Image 1: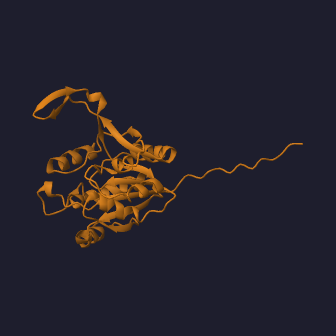
Image 2: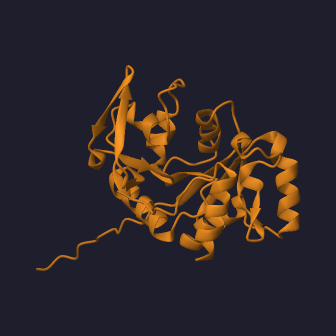
Image 3: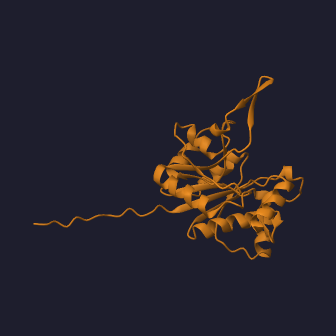
Length: 233
């Protein structure tokens, strides 16, 4: 006699993104924070948010902003008719503390990405690849290879090193939310250079995926000019 076997299909985890926009942009030499500087008719931060909505339309957004910048951001939202829903979180003393505040707005059982507001050129492919890999493996970090010769400087001397052993790390860095929220319960350390390094401090292995070279972080006026050129292509 045949039996009917009930198979429960596991549903994909919900997706959340914490966009960290708390920096003052001092290297821009501008009174306007870099995430609010406009190019091609919109602030950097709006370009960034729209990239994630385009890639994952039902993604849940957390924006981490310094309380001092919120009135300026609200003014920009009105000016540009920005109506994409999001949860606000306060920026902290360091990026670590800002991300921790953002993660407090994220539930346990989901996949969460953490992204620099000043990276508006992240590609749809990079977004989807990092989220999908993190859902499968627990975490994912986009990286691109180095195509220049590099040297290591130590104790007043320098030597050539194999560039194939080094990668440039980007965002979004994506994680199972339960893992990364637990990692951010650690005390802050200056060794935490990004979100993956916080998780790595717990003994987790980080999974690298291919990023996109255009996904630069805008930190100087020159970067803004480059971003305008790239996004216009």
